[in-house]
Length: 244
Picture 1 (cartoon, rainbow, N blue to C red):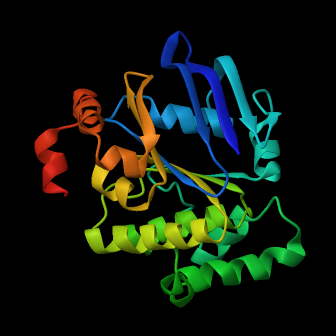
Picture 2: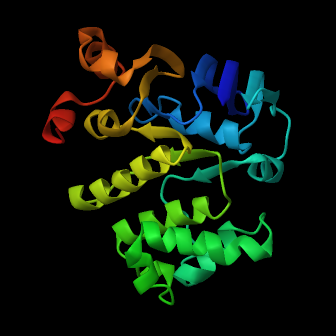
Picture 3: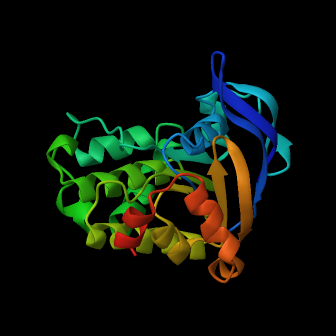
């Protein structure tokens, strides 16, 4: 569904990602791992159209989208759940969901909202509550739900586990697993190796903007070079082991 060919992207003269090539198969979850500053967020922001592509190509479902504006990528089926959630704090849960579905026909709005509430019943209970008053876990659920309102075929997710209690991380990842079973394709950016290995079909490790490892999750679990690349990329070993 997604293919990056020699992707180089960045901000002005700074290149955050250099010559990145990877594929995400339809109906799978691909986890892109690495420390802060490795280029993970820049990669998915380039796919979403928020960071300039300086070289290479982005292909979605076989067609090149490198030069398309963000809104057209959303219409084609790409949605982003950004790091930090970036919700509209003064809007209610329901209003945030409506914003997420702006690119889809109005007659499908209620159906998509029901789907989100079925996936996250807690959001249904708080549908008239302002997003800024929700807990961190509830805000992450809402950010995921807002992305789903766009009816994506590819969901880009940045640091789902960041700042959340383990129980809330489990809830979010269980939902992601359900969506993948339904056929949704997910590109997941994570720092936490253990969470990613629980849900992903394949993994890649970025180090200073370069892909240094890529394999299926099953192979990575039994490959000692995987953890070597992961920790060599700059991930703190003691912190990772404490999250195991």
